[in-house]
Every structure is written in structure tokens, then in C-alpha cells.
Length: 267
Image (cartoon, rainbow, N blue to C red; front, side, top):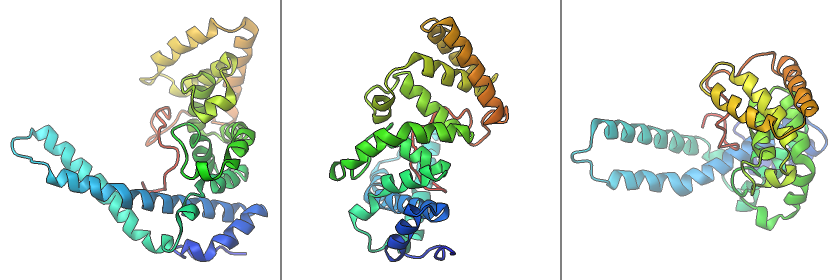
């Protein structure tokens, strides 16, 4: 059964997409996630970006340096891009309640369980960088996250997702100890080592290589020799099978500075 035409207001098709997603329709699940995320971004932009742009317009620019002027132009261009995005998607998001828009987390979970890598990054990352909108009204999302986050993360890595390698390595390495993901994984130097080894293979001879090598040396000294050897073998095998022995490519760069897990395509 074909999906509703692009641009159809989400309020008119949300129930249909939810039912199809729960029944295992991968395309419907991905569409529901993407449209809901789009509306979450529209709400954020309308709430914050126009106000930030106005504040910058009100700032005096007399005597600012050429570098500062270029930075100001770049920021205005970004604000303009986001405001255009909100205007272009206003019709899709019209009539939705705040709770409707807050359904990014369950929509991402279902799409991720059905194999959507972008949804997987959003779902796992929602417990890595801040508190998801709507969580206080839906405490059941916490138990769902505890049950599913690591499974979704591992499946995404098997599909060749460098961003997930970074998030899971940081979680096992206790780099974000208070995050939801870090609390789910706990501190596990063995898991952190093998994921960091994989990250190192992806970094190759890039600017992050020296950092990876130092971190690997420290972690390698914390774990038994057989665990280190097993981690090396797993990383090499995964690099070949899941990633095709190919490092991350632009625009993702190293793939390791992943701070905004939930965002719409085009932002």
C-alpha cells in the first residue's frame, strides 16, 4: 500500500502511519519518524531561532572586525536556512499538539527496530545528549529505552553506522557517565576498547588518529591480554564486513563529533 503523498499534514495521517508501523511496515515507520522529527524542528525553530536572529539584528556592529562580520553573516545564513525550513514545513505540522510533536522518541524506536539507521541514531542519541521532550509525561519511554537502546545500537553498527560506534564507545567508556545511554551500558572497559579500536581503524591516518592511539593504549592496559586480542579481532572483522574497510567520508568527516543525534534531513 503506497504511503500518503509527501507534504500531507501529519495530523491527517498520523494514526494510519502508527498502525502500519506497529504492523511492521518499514516505510510507514520511517515516514512517521521523519515527519514527527520535522515538526519537532519546526517547533524549535519557531520558538527560538527568530528570537535569536532579532537579538543579533539589535546588536551594534560599529567597528567590528572583518572576521566578526563574516561570522555574523554566516550565523544569519544559518538562521535564514532554518526559518525557511520552518516555513516550508508549516503545512505538514499544522494542527499538531505538543504531545503529538513529542512523539519523536517512540516513532524513532519503532523505525529503528525496523532497520532505519537515522532513526536509530536519533533514538539512541536521545539518551546521550540531553533529555528528550515529553519524557516526564511518558515514563514508560525509560523502560523501553533500557530494553532496546543497546540492541538498536549494535544493529546499527552491523549496518555500518559510524555515528553509533562513537556514541556506544563514549557510553561504555563512561565519557558521558550521567547520560541515559551511559547508565544503560555501564562502564565496561572491554567493550569500550573494542569500539575505540574500530573507531581507530576508521580514523586511519586522520587528525584523530593520535588521540585514538593514546586512548587505546590506556584502555589496553586496563583489560586482560586475551580481551584485548579479542577486541582487536572483532574491530578488524567489523571494519571489513560492516564498513567495507572504508573510513567515514565527508560531510561526516571523522564521524566522531556527533552531538546532534535528532535532526531533520536538510538541517
